[in-house]
Image 1 (cartoon, rainbow, N blue to C red):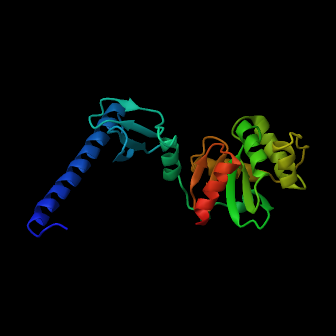
Image 2: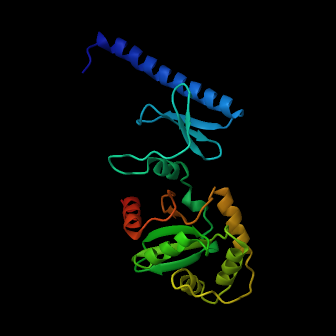
Image 3: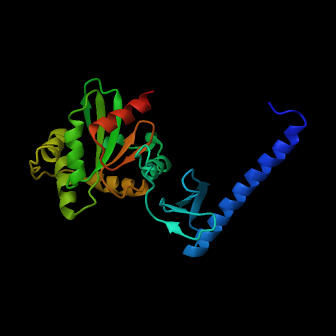
Length: 238
């Protein structure tokens, strides 16, 4: 414990350090915006990696630089000890949403086992990684999935999405295609929900599929195997 005599000095040092960090972050913000030529920086934070600063742009992108903005890194940081993709984890954290805003009636619902765990996915029917994900999800139990058909790859993706949505059994039509490769037969109905899904995905800055959301609103961008999904779902349940 600090003595009374040392407390004022420690307080001054803490305030000075905090002021220096704030000044450095402001300098980085100014340097990046000067380089880009516009006010595009959302936030700046120093990282524990190589004296780098994390810069979050208003577009949702993440870049790195040093205190003097003498260079800019547009790429990923991988923790060599844990092999974790630090950048992806941080982007997922930054892009978390309020789960309650999702219009789940616009998604295909499937319940396995007791369905207590919840996973929302945005998927394009022609996405190769979505097909890999589909084969992983069928291995999982006690899970409710909500699949938002999100055709962004091609006109054929839109056609398949509409046919799947208009099928008598949407879940069966989706699984037949995404898992077994059976093309969904032509079907007609009010499929305007597909257009609303695309608008929603754009609002949520979903630029690739699959993109997943857990019940706490956290985002998982890209394919992950069932073992990793189990860990993520378990973490939310705690």
